[in-house]
Length: 175
Image 1 (cartoon, helix red, strand yellow):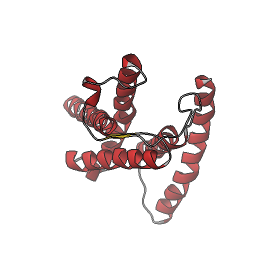
Image 2 (spheres, helix red, strand yellow):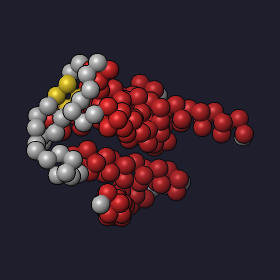
Image 3 (cartoon, helix red, strand yellow):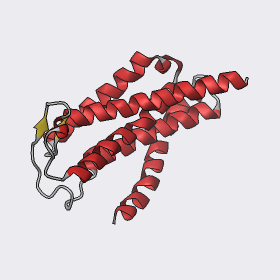
Image 4 (tube, helix red, strand yellow):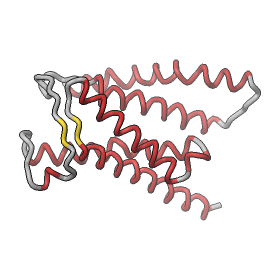
C-alpha cells in the first residue's frame, strides 16, 4: 500500500514542480537572465522537495496510521527518553530517525540553490522556520505537534548542510 502511494506521488510531484518552476525559468529568460542548467535542476529539485514535504507532513493522511484526529502537543524536549509514547519504543525511534532523514535534502539543496543560502545562519533559519511551520499546521489539522520533531528535523537539515560543506571542500580541492 505504501509503495502505491509513493509510485503515485513522485510523478505528480515532478509534474507539479515543473508547472511551478517553468514560469520562473521563462520569466528569467525574458529578463535576459541566463543560468546554467545545473542551477535550474537544483531549484527544480528544491520545489519538488517542498511539494513532497508538504504532502508527507500535511496532506498524507493514512487512516490506519492516524485513525482519529487528535490535538496532541509535546513541548518537553526529549521526553521520549523517559516516557515511551503509545506507539512503542521501536516505532518511536523509527519516527525520530525519519524526521532526521526527511530534512537532510533541505539542508543540502538550499545552499546549492543560491549564493546567499550558503551561510549557515540563513540555511538554519529556513530549516527551523520550515519545521516549526509544519508542526503548527499539523497541530491545527488534527495531528500531533512535537518539539522533538522540530529538533530532529533541524538536526537533519544541519546534517544536510554539513554534507554540502564537505562536498564543497572536496570539489574545491580537486579544481
